[in-house]
Image 1 (cartoon, rainbow, N blue to C red):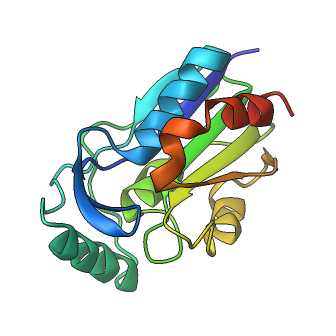
Image 2 (image 1 turned 120 degrees about the horizontal axis):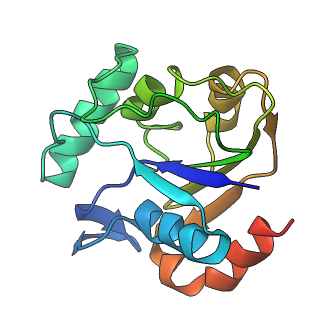
Length: 168
């Protein structure tokens, strides 16, 4: 059984544990790497062609505008197919109640028919928001399993939780 983690993550200035902090690795990327280590899943990081502003407040303003416009920002590299994978982990931070718009850009290009999808989200209190509804549309034809919701401030303390979720 082969698997892949398709994820979006942002390092730099982030809202983390109730305050703004600079982090070297985005919270979602930490979880993606756990999955890679524990399950052997391939990794594919979705990155916007134009980086988000380094300043957190500016970044969330851009993200909100993209969402309001239902934008599909260009991404640096596109994953063309997931045909060789049985399980697809999809990870992202909760931005304004759902996935960051570059994830829409990527996921809309893929055929999820017959795939098992396991979503995970990092957040600071908002959980999945409406992203599960959006994932159901984006991953048409997939068997979407229970998701894993992780507060960003806890990512370095949840490896065992991630392992239990993988094995569900």
